[in-house]
Amino acid sequence: MRILFCGETFASARALLQERLPSEAGDEVYVWPDRGTATDLSHVDVLIPMMFRIDGEIMDAARFRLTQQWGIGA
Image 1 (cartoon, one colour):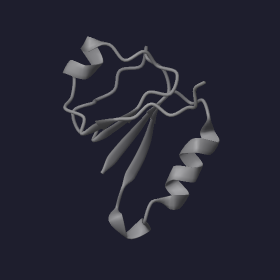
Image 2 (spheres, rainbow, N blue to C red; image 1 turned 180 degrees about the vertical axis):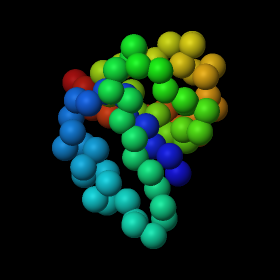
Image 3 (cartoon, rainbow, N blue to C red; image 1 turned 120 degrees about the vertical axis):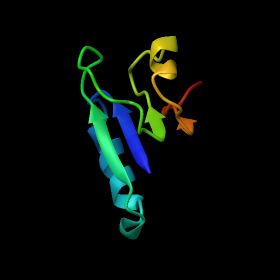
C-alpha cells in the first residue's frame, strides 16, 4: 500500500505510523512536501491531508482507497 502524507507537519505521526506498519507488508510512506510541488498521485492508495486543502483537482488526479484526516476535534 502506498500512503501519502500531504505536508511535512507532524513528523512524529509519520514516524509512529511507519513504526507500527508490519515490515513484511511492504507498505510505502511518502511525503508530499508542498502543494506547489508536482507529484504523481495515480499510485497513491491512502491520502492523509494533514494541513493540505484537498480539492476536486486532487481527488480527480487519483482513485484513493482511503482519505483519512488525522486530528482531534471538540
